[in-house]
Length: 239
Image 1 (cartoon, rainbow, N blue to C red):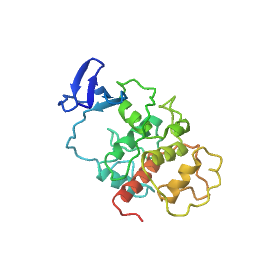
Image 2: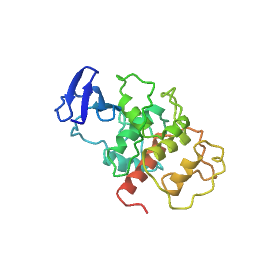
Image 3: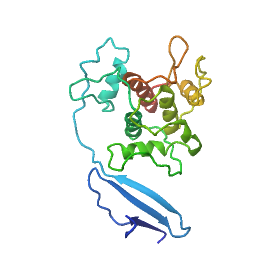
Image 4: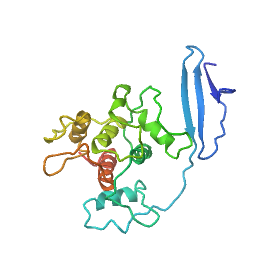
């Protein structure tokens, strides 16, 4: 036997043993390669798929809103969810934690190549936190030499537009083949190469005044627009 599962550093399971996972609980395992002695951490959370009706309209997203069709398409696909009061709050900003959680869940539902780098950086969250598994999953898709490009010391702060572009470019293997428009305010940004790459891939765009505002906040509507472009690319409907 080449590999063993070790649960909680105590009970040893053969790799082909059926593991019973409690719904919604994060389970920690250690995989040991007995040939090389290398150890790998593994965390699993069982979350069964549930049939549910998708809310496809929101009382604060009307046809005149610039992101109406993006939000509508994502909602119809079950990828955009609103609040219990029937609103979507399209012009509200997103926290780092909310954005990383959304990216992780979105990555499981679109047919795009995902990065997964072999490092074991941790995040400042308790394992019992509702977003721990999702945030950790996204963080470990970032190349180790780029971890300094996202400040995760406070995950409840608003995420910037530059950080959002950086994380999207880190999670998915996106290659831009088009020319990028000139943006006057990105060349001193630590996220410049990621912004340019996403522009070349037609995933993001700047403002009419020729800026991107990498240090500005990003709204739920703007995120919906970006994710809908990724969704369409995964379907092959965007050139």
